[in-house]
Length: 356
Image (cartoon, rainbow, N blue to C red; front, side, top):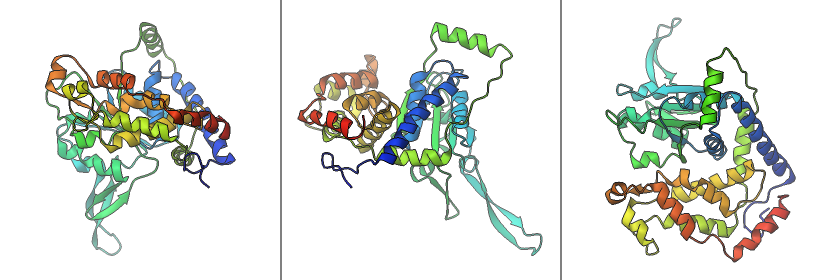
């Protein structure tokens, strides 16, 4: 049955109860991660949003900020298989997806091809320093990320579900690196900046990591529960005015559009495509649910705008020479694009209808 106000499927009482469980589980996962990871709350929130929105993340940060530990710990709290792939210039596509080998059957003596799975056949993949490997090897992840499968020797092999790719790249040392093509960057739902900890956080890191302390984390969710919750997140209704706001925001980044602001035309060479709108809305849905709401508002879109759009809004030489970043352009658009309309009257009604 569809809701008459949004034209989208209604959430039943069981769905709402399950979404409330997701919000509670998010709090529990955060507590478990805080046993090992100090700070990085914004990064953890964005990772959780991406997971429940069926997205992938591209993390940018200097070495030593616990990116690997964060992802492996997150996988443990969700009882998911974790694999770390260190990308190097000599890494081959077969090192990621697997390869076919000839094996002899000891009983019949016949030789046949057997597929040996690569590390990509895990639930959570950490592609460490993905820009260290040539484009051919980078592209080995494209089919896996988009189609949730790999093709070897004409045979398709499905990947385990849920499937989540987290790729990291070092923003400092660019010698010997291969910039990710825009088409591959677009496959990542979020680009997340991992920043240095505060003084107090770094004190806690120094205090705990130099002592003989062993901490165990509890399993909060199972893979089956995550899959069901991912489906439920997609069913959360979005008012039409929120969709219009996301559309206006993305279309304002396209320099060939008539309503593109002058400051955008002067600062960027390329803007976001339709995946930008899709990821804004799905990310907004996941954020709303993690906060305990079963309706989406424009603040949810604003909260995910930076990680969704920063790698889709490509600045030109003039902007870069002036120190203008993609985040600067996104922030200005969020200020200048109106986020209110008559449709805002729908939001309180949705809140009452779905127990918000």
